[in-house]
Image (tube, rainbow, N blue to C red; front, side, top):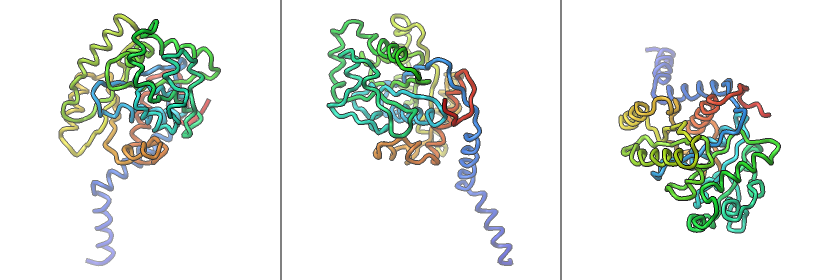
Length: 310
């Protein structure tokens, strides 16, 4: 075989490898995102991200969706209601013990506007940080007046006071059903549930849905499970595919078409105080979160071109 024929044959073979196909698919998805039509809601969408099962990518999804929404032109406020403060860390927002935080809002009645900080990632991305003080808030809330409604009251006051209202408020919950999570459910319009594509994925989900029904009955009749996001997806395994199929079978209208793959870049980003959108915006994980954000926005109202700011 001539050298030119061998080179041509090798090139054709390389273009058909799994890696080459994966890279070509990723490039096509990036191009599609550049021209994607998104919808900015006319009124603020308040979404609680919750799953009582730990390790499902709850905080990771909160901050990366927030950054992806901001990169697409939406104003986003993240309320870090988890005492661990991981969302605050990932957004690059200071949250040491002496920083004004969501604790001051819920326990002391401080205005939410007094604790909101801008993330260094984007002028459209803000955060109400958590501090270590929030760890004792569950106990302190027990004796508070209107203890289940304190976050809702604070958010309503904030939206009434600010000139440019956020298009999205994303509330990151602790992985338990205590008074903090109840406050998040009471304040929100929607619940977004991340579900990992692994064994026992649906474990505890019935308990979470029962909690949502309880909140609907007694505290917030407008609350609904609007979105389910499949995370930690590994397309090479039959297990991930089976879990995805099972979740879509049970929740055909709630599950986003986008799945979030297992990604080293997504795991690395928080250690640099960044979301994956800022850390490596061209990676597969970042592209997936941007696609999920576009899909979430397209469930809104007013059409706009991706990337346009108001």
